[in-house]
Length: 82
Image (cartoon, rainbow, N blue to C red; front, side, top):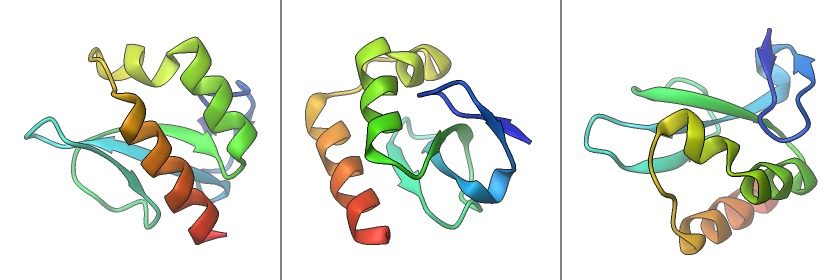
């Protein structure tokens, strides 16, 4: 069970998408859930990603600033993954 950084609901790991920060500091969307690095979870809805973006919860969990272009890329990947 993991908590969504957008809505705060606790759901099974398979129902969520993992956002990963790897050892080089690169942040990406991990649709498989198997990438190396620190993870934060968000529901598979664009609304939850937007809530997490607005409240900066993903940035707080990774302790770094995430550029707007990266959030836009994650939204595009999430739409394509549906």
